[in-house]
Image (cartoon, rainbow, N blue to C red; front, side):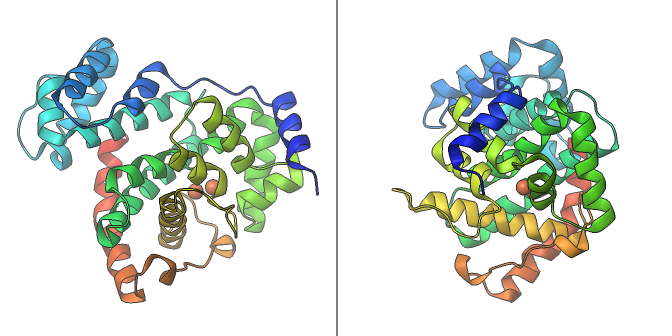
Length: 282
Ligand SMILES: [Fe+2]
Ligand SMILES: [Fe+2]
């Protein structure tokens, strides 16, 4: 087993860590506490016309727009909410990070969207963290895979092959074939991007059996929610189907009963396809 420092060195030697698209970076730093941040968000998005047009297209889809026509970024923020807009910006930026958008990239993006939807539903049900925080965490949890796939496409395609042929988990196949995994890479990215601690914890530890002790226990809860959402989506076969690699869901840790989980699972299944179809237009 390699030490943490040598894993980090190996990654920094082999992987070129991208920067977070500036719009997403600025939007992630905005906190919804007063009107001024809405104006700031509007200015940030409106600066880029192509980007604004994409966001408006999704904001006008039946799910978000609920049949009303939204023509400006400011009315979109008022109509769909500051936090949903924040998630849309992060989702669009995440999509833009892919160098190409073939079948695997589409599945990976779908997986991130589905996990974010499921995580926000679990957050709403448990009321343990803000649902929008869970949504952004779900979107970004596997960002390490995107970076690996962009950086070492040939090697990573062998990892993908192993996952699909042998039903291995990405995590295990990556360690075997690369010597590190998408969580190691994700942790470095989260620190480079100066993401909030909760997001960093989710990105780095969502496959860990045990988490280090944190000052703020809500980080652990957020991580548990994304872990559960991740397993739930794999169970439902959304994004990827790798039956042998599906982790157990620890419902009790979140204070959920298995009936609660069945309900969340049914809700995700009922709404995720429509939301995915609309978000794919981003
Ligand atoms: Fe993962
Ligand atoms: Fe995942």
